[in-house]
Length: 258
Image (tube, rainbow, N blue to C red; front, side):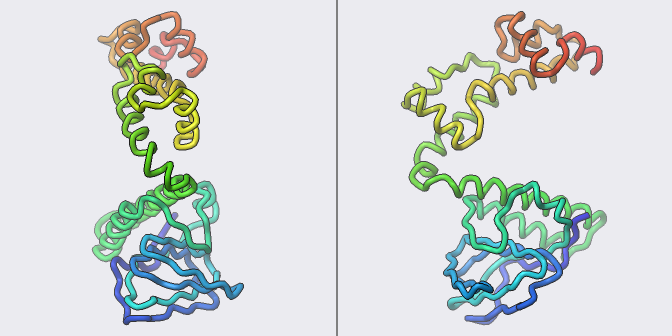
């Protein structure tokens, strides 16, 4: 169970204030920097951090940082097991710059409000928010690794198109159509898709169509053929083959189990 030890949202300390905890804390500390600060590490390295920087300190780790002038940040101390956090593959005890700091700051506000108000089921809600925070950090780090020129260029256009494709998967989408919309070649499309989303356009489209077909088949008023066609499959034999390959059973068997 994840629990909150202490937290703060848009915290202001005195100007140039120093935080020094040589033995760290018993809890994890996630800190979102909102004004320029300098972080000092046990190896005597000093790192200048700009607004938007983040750090996740592990329990017992040396903590030392100082505001360059104004002291302004949001943070949360929380307890959790190593098992709870290891799958998120988040950088620890060093500065990083995720690309979703607005979402992170909004979530820290929700954590703070829940912690202060202490409403019914507050512990469950704060645990949920911390899991959400870890997921956002994981996603933000993945985007941080993409060069700025790529992320600021094709990424937003491709992300928007991907949402459109997966949200209307029943439409006759093709790689050629996507390339035409983005005005790029096939090799570039596959390269960027793998870089940003770790998959291929075709694989994600097939998964989205199968997911929609399974949802439609839960309605007994919809035939299997109709579910397939309404999900974007124009060839029922192809649909049956893909369904068996991906789901381990035929559409008819799936419907009987549902």
